[in-house]
Amino acid sequence: MFDYLDIVKLKRDYQNLHKKPNEVDFLPRGSQGTIVMVYDERVGSECYPTEYEVEFMNDEGETLAVVTLKGDDLVLVQAYGSIAAA
Image 1 (cartoon, rainbow, N blue to C red):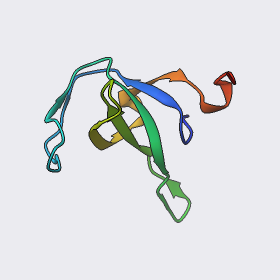
Image 2 (image 1 turned 45 degrees about the horizontal axis):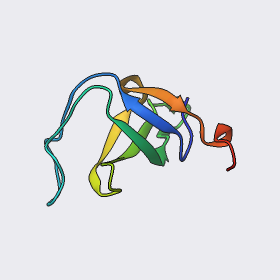
Image 3 (image 1 turned 90 degrees about the horizontal axis):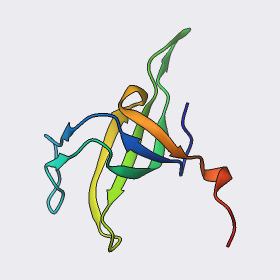
């Protein structure tokens, strides 16, 4: 669905209940972030929904939050491989 370093945005508001120090406790719908880890949990022949660790940053490049989300919470903005070289 999504890959490492894809740029995504939130489909809905996110309340960061497990925030770390210096992270924000709320991310509004439409916040953009980068996928920094892809989790695919398999047990036997069963495959559970893939989850993604997403880093959200402000305009100064400071991390606002790093959260683990399901694919249903995200919309693809730009695939990593499609970013044009400068």
